[in-house]
Figure 1 (cartoon, rainbow, N blue to C red):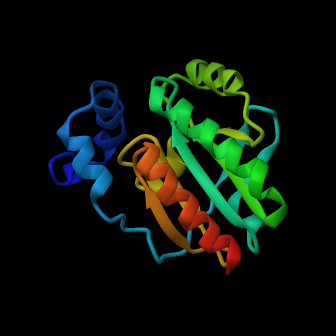
Figure 2: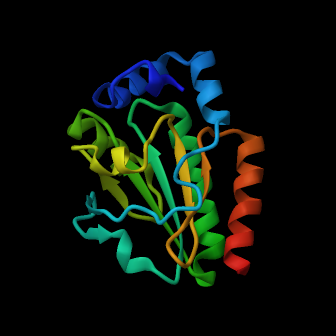
Length: 176
């Protein structure tokens, strides 16, 4: 929606400012269908706060959840905690979860990731390569990828309603 008005290079910085302020533009973005649904998930290699490197392409055969977050996003913290509960429940069924920080400030990203205390790797994307590849347009943004590597669902908000929808979609993917 707002990409028509702003060049691609300005989308992520504008998004972070808007996410902090809230507003009707974000509600409209969260409801719009995402262009990646039904397409292969873009591969990436990112460094985790724990020190390991993670490459998405190494997880074919598993259901993967990506959660894009920012250290300045309070809703992101609640969403990451909900994803941590999902991982505890469904890890044995082949679920992998990764949090991807797309902050401009690497120090703030690292501090946020360390405080999050989740059981999945918190990845840092300071150059925003993964953020651009996944066309992140709202935070938090959750991407569900099926066992074949196809993006099946994209959720661009977090609330009790979206959490219920996410769990239904996740269970469907795990049962395939």
